[in-house]
Amino acid sequence: MNTTPRPRIVIVGGGYAGTMAANRLCQADADVVLVNPRPQFVHRIRLHQWIAGTGTAEHDYTEVLADRVRLVVDTATRIDAPAGRIELASGEMLDYDHLVYAVGSTATGAHTIPGVAEHGFVLGEWEGAQRLRDHLATVGESDQTTVVGGGLTGIETAAELAESGHTVRLVCGGVLAPSFGSRARGVAQRRLRKLGVEILTDRRVETVGDGTVTVVGDGVREILPSATTIVAAGFGVPDLATTSGLTTDPAGRLITDETLTSVDDPCIVGAGDAVAPSGVPFRMSCQAANQLGPQAADTVLARLAGAAPKPVRVAFVGQCTSLGRGGATVQLTRLDDTPRHTVVTGRVAAGIKEFVCRNVIWGLNLEARRPGAVPTFPVRPRPIPAEPPVESTIGAV
Image (cartoon, rainbow, N blue to C red; front, side, top):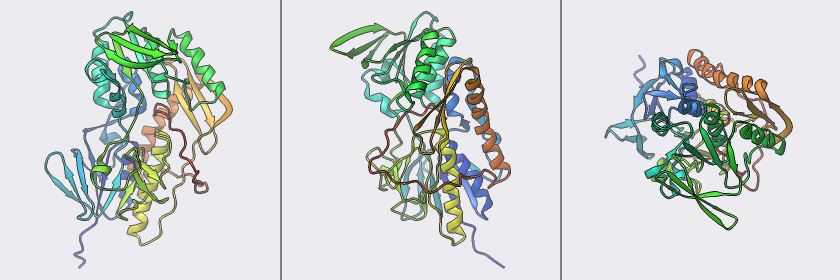
């Protein structure tokens, strides 16, 4: 009789990458545990719809997580790698044989703007989106809303609110949609202006006040009215890896090799926004997370089987960015995420974006029902550039 205990695999973080990894790991004869601060799955690429009242961004884990996975609603505060143990905010300890580090990204960098914590709203996490949604229900549509951040998250938020009738100003602080090619950038700009969004590309926000926002640029400093100020920029990662003594990059991402294995411990594998394979992270996006999650799981499965893990393979195909319910921009990309000349716009693009958002949930559900069913891209391992790519915000798929 075999009395050897089954290995325990713990996944920290129940976003796109963590949930996908947890489902895929159900192929193993192991106990699979998912630790997440919230009891519901947050469909993050729909948060802008949630705040505008045009869609939902929350799903019960029964819709996306395999029955075999045990969900622990708690927050990991420290990883004791030598002991193979996680310390939780509740005071509990959780032992593991293998750990998948998938804590995702946060909007903590936005708090560097003075006054945001007291007078503004930070978009990027469920709690902030809920507070913003409640606040918007108390102000009039003619009251000025300022969205800070010209990346894809800021664009989607500005467009969604403007189409819903709000008076919106978008402060870019530089180039609008820097991850787009010039053609897609022009399409997005025209659509925003058609929706009535005032775009300030040559200004940055200095401070956020009570009912005001101070912007500066080109030698000008203005205090503008702003009943609602939303910061959709400055995304970072939780400091769990850093405080746990694991090797990280300057932004706090876990450093791994090309198999997504921590350079400190072969029992720790990373996935998603908070990971930098060979020190070079992928663009923060659902698209990357949904590929890194299965591959992190495959690395763990290979080690359980005594096989050599394969190097990471991530292929980007496009950046789908909604511009209200009636429009979108799909910037097709090369496999390395650089923009192609081809751009899809209008209602066709809106249909593609909606299909992709629904397909994300469908893919998680498929992997929950049939672990291993979601394919990974059969492309060559990525080349490692001499310099890390310029990072954009996370609004697009």
